[in-house]
Length: 245
Image (cartoon, rainbow, N blue to C red):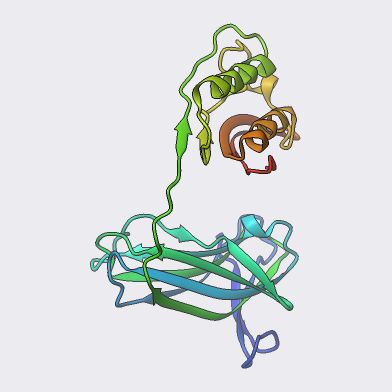
């Protein structure tokens, strides 16, 4: 019921005629597209997926365009978890998405999955898809700090957030690449219900966390309650080193 419409489009292509097209088919729940299982995978070896796409009717490419590697074992069961392509660069009318990842333990094959999701009025075209082994990249040291804290009787989301920021200032040493805060930092200790503390994103909490991330040149992750119209979401936000969501 949620399958989109797929077809080979002989008009849209980067070179030779033909691309792998996906239409949302006016289905708000549409999820899926094209899949190819590549055999001969070596566990522990690094691979690079590259694929080109162009789209019409997309409102948020990061959420609606999906390129991923779903690793499988010899018996067909999943090995590890899928890896998602997130590096995207424009090339003319097309965009190139790449993914570099190691095959997890037990992997003997991988499903290359090129999907469209939650885009009922969009059409997505994929072309020039490659998967190749690459050299193992060098190590990158990353410093991560985690905060485990439960403010008490704060009465307001802003006060609870202030206490978390105070703890960061006191306990987290520079330089730190990633700072992780708990789930629900805007409700814990307030005595309020989720609906009472829910806010927009961006909003006052992401603005305050952005100040911290920017001052420390760190990524910052936190769980807050988001309101979008009548809907409430238990949302995790990622703030970058420049303080942006």
